[in-house]
Length: 201
Length: 217
Length: 191
Image (cartoon, rainbow over all chains, first blue to last red; front, side, top):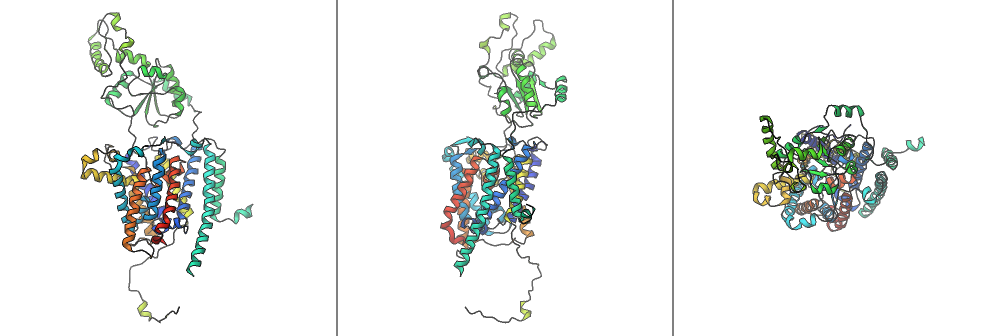
């Protein structure tokens, strides 16, 4: 099998848009299934009450990571054709920080805000308005910040390449981090649930 | 052991499965797998016999003039020779670096060297990596120079030869070459000084073919 | 605390509603949702050779908006041009279609589970308007952060995380750090 199918010419740009739509449906479906259309559930992560954000995100990451690793190992997928967003260390760092702050203030992220809007959440609509405004503000400020935006460029680089460790070892490490994180998350949730119950009495 | 597994919740079973998969990943080697190639000898032999493995200099010249973006030209010569002159839009990739390149699987890849032997080696390397459209520039750079840059009009041209020469003349000028019409031997010897400079004519699109659509978030 | 009880005649408790009201079902186990999400992501990798995303679609909308209202201004700005100069209609964009699917998929899941309802997510300790204001501010910060980092949680964290992308892991760590750091200051909104 020659995959990624699109890169090997199995279908053209027009069909890829239909593929996008279908994949989007799956994406939105599972986001809502997990309860990520609710800002309160999302924000609860950052008060240690509900670690679903961490659980869902890391489960998804290790599922896709293991799937991709083994599919390319048996030769079905050409991993080098899968697009990797180039790394710009400082913009990634600062962007992540700002995004995190925005996450807990706004209660959504761009993907989940669409799900929230789709299920009628009014605050989701306000969030989307803010999102559009934020992007616009960025666009207007771009001429002044484009130097920073393009700084500390490292190209397309993966963790195995950076640490010069084999890909498989890093896969294992990530699985360990995820599973360990899950165990810890369960404990933390229980701890805070108890604390909340005690405070309510 | 069976007892242990039976007592696990589905979640724990999945977690264990992930752990096992992750553990085996350590020994699975690199998923990129970029040192060995597999060749289908019969296919390649047929392609070579039918001459479907090369393109003419005229075809390549036309592609460049028409501004097509679905092909890549690869110059396999050393960097110094590439710097002295290379076909417009060509990239300098040595044979040893060929395995590390990532082209679009559906791009047309045209290899050239001075006469074509190195390019032929590169052809096998790229074909072995499942690129579908790999070609050798027929005759190599020498033919490019002879037919495109410095096309020669024979001494007593027939009307056909004159017509085709006139066509080639325009192409030659496009690439900054000098069509040779003189009968004197000295004039028809392309001197090193006459090789066009590295500046590409303005109407040639930039050397990165096929603008990739944004694939980020 | 004394609780007052009052017997209510049976007729008064009869609901006159003829519309079937589905009670909201509980959410799926996060691990199973995560596997589902991971499989969708894997499908994107295998079929398209790219991952998911969301903020890019909004950037396209902004770029088209600016271009419609002030084309000269948009021309001079490299950022907007990045979303406009493809030669084809900017809306014929993979992310735009994916986000449309996102909305549909979210709605389907919500409808099936009885979770489609006009409401506002907030704690009891804050007013509606304040929540809307925070949602807007949060969204604006997210927009800036997502553009700086060339992605949001779907594109950079999920996709890049699965691909072991260096920038994505840096991003992901900082998202959690920033959110936890700021959580204390807005706890009224949620707790």
